[in-house]
Image (cartoon, rainbow, N blue to C red):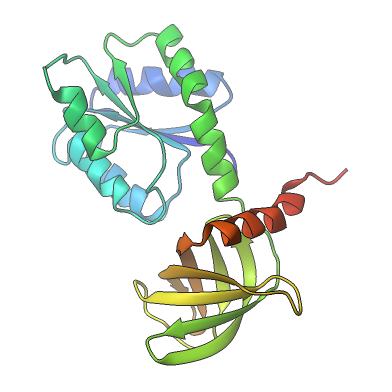
Length: 229
């Protein structure tokens, strides 16, 4: 997954300036002055980082951050708020709402590139978190009192696409038993269906897993993440 940055700033000149700085640093950057349009895109597109102006026509930066934190795709994406304010309590409210970093105006190239370096660890973490691998594993799915078997079509560190053989509505909570190899003890997790593909495939987001199973899950994924020579 390439690095994708979304800039949301209602000042057209500043918006374009930030986009040009990031693009010159070889970062795939998209920019908009329309926060409502940005809100729609954030529901359906995954970004590596989001830069938001604090004061914009609704939704403003804090409201947009709250929407991001409640979304499926960008729930833990780094959010950087752009502001010229130093109001007492502003940072506390912003951090409480899910903001990761602040970029104070006036904005210049040095500030932007320094902040990108600071956030790079978070961005790289997100890229790895959403990298998907085509791996087939058996999965037992429990929904209420119903139990049935499926197979993964691809997996990532926090979820999977599973052929379930039946239609399961988005938002459905499920319990999983994932068989990484024949005869091995299954990994158990709770998950939620975040998308439906056709009539029998579901995208699952893992919500909780025992510590020992997290270790086994990451050990299983690690060799898949090594670049082939």
